Image 1: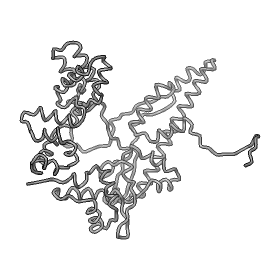
Image 2: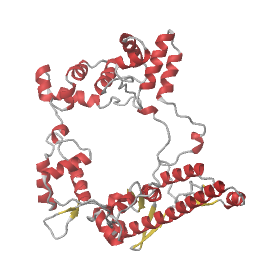
Image 3: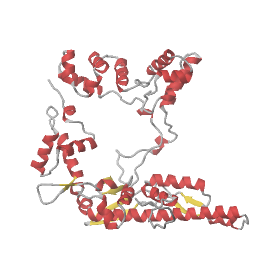
Image 4: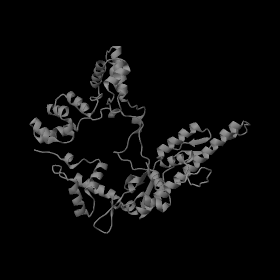
Length: 436
C-alpha cells in the first residue's frame, strides 16, 4: 500500500445547513397557528420586526343552526379549574397536621394530567426525607378524594378504586379487575370463566360495565389552551369548476419597523450599526421565507387538485392513489419539501375539512383495470368491521377474501393487520362479544 504525506487539493460538494436554511425549513412545516406564535416570539428578539396581528375572527361564512350556535356571553369570565386546584380545594376543608398536609400537597404536584402517580413511594420518601409508610398513607388519602381513581399508580388500580366506590358493589367485576386484569384485557375470557365458574356472558357484562368507568380521572380538568383547526386552503366547486384560495388573511402582517431603524441609523457606534444590520438582515430573511412558504404551499396544493380532481368534484369515494414523490417530481422539488409542506395543514372542501396528507396514499392492486388507494381500502375495511356480526367477527384473512371477492381489491393479511393498527381497530378476538 502506497502511503505518502504531503499537501493535496481535493474538490467536493457539500450542502451546508446554515441557521437561515434550517429556519426556512422549519417555517414551511409550521401550521398557521404555530407560524403566528413563531412571529410573535421573533418580535421579542428583533425590535426591527413589525408584526401586526390581523382579525383572527374573519373566517369564511358558515351556516349557523340551533345545534351549532353558542352564545358567547355564556363564556365571559369563564375560568377552567385544574386538577391540582380541584384537589387542593378539597384539602382546604380538612383538618390535617402540617407534615401530612405537606406530603399530600407534594404528591398532588407529581400527578400527571390524567391523575396518575408514576413516582415510586420510596423515591418520594427520599425526596421528603420521610418514611415510606407516611407516603403510602398520603397516597391513600389522595385516592379518597374526588375524582375517584385519582392517585392510582396504573389503570388496574384506577378502575378498582372506582369499583370500590360504587354504592352497589359489583363483586365479580372487582374480582376480575383485582385478580385477573391482564387476562381480562387480553380477552382470555374462557380461562377466567373456567377459574371463576361463571358464564362467558357474565364476563361480557363486566366488560360492558367497565366501559362506563373513567380510565383518565383527571381528563375533565385538562382545560388549558384550546386547539383550533384553521384551514389553510378553501376549495370551492361550482359547475364542475374547482377554485382554490389560500386562507392567510388572518396571519400577522410582517414588515420592517423603519421608524425604529431610522432612529438609530445615525448612531456613530460601530457595534450599534452592526447590530442594526444583523436585525435588518433577519427581518428580510423572515419576509422572504414567508413568501417562499406561501408559494410552495400553493404549488403543492395546486398539484394535489390537478391529480385529485375527481375527489374535489364528486367526493372521497374517488380518491386516487398518489405518493409524495409524484408531486415532488412534477414541481421539481425534493420529496421532503412536500412532506414538510403538508404537515399540519388543512383543506376546507365541499365534503368537509381534510388534512393535506390525507390526499396521499399508496397504490393497491385490484382485479380490474384501475387500481385503488390505501385510503379507500381502509374505508371499505372499516365499514365491513362496523357491520360485522360481533359474535363472529371477521378475521384478517376473511377480510382479505371479501375485499378480493366483492371489491376486487388485492391485499395481504399482513397489510390488513397493519391497517387495523393504524385505525386503532382491535383484532377479531378482542372484538368478539358473548351472549346467552
